[in-house]
Length: 125
Image 1 (cartoon, rainbow, N blue to C red):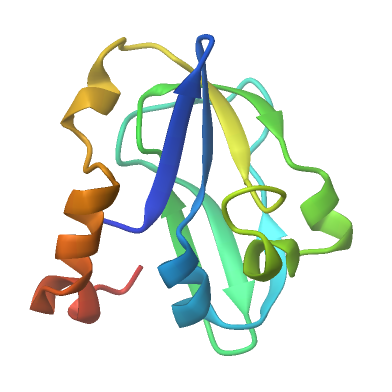
Image 2 (image 1 turned 90 degrees about the vertical axis):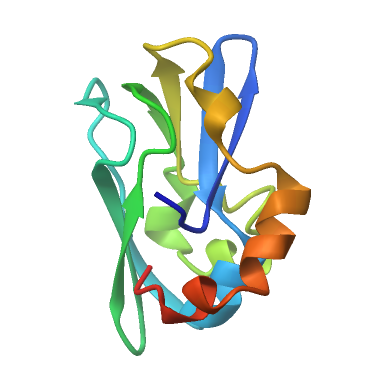
């Protein structure tokens, strides 16, 4: 499944957010529904929701694992997703349960290619 989440795996924890491209598409984020701590998810499972002034968007788990942290700052300031999607606007962190699963994901260069494809513009998430 190709979607617009990013994942950064460091020290056994996978941080997850949405791409800068996605936050531009979503526009003004007004609410973020964060997953519950301890929730176990499979790769590709809808885990969170971002709501903007125009629509709600499902966020999918890029890897399987257990939710070990959520970005509580987003409850008070959901627009962090727009202002800082790759740093302060991260959504949640997972403890991956299937090591190496992230190796099948797009890297930044492949994501840039994907953005040029018709599939990227017809996607609903």
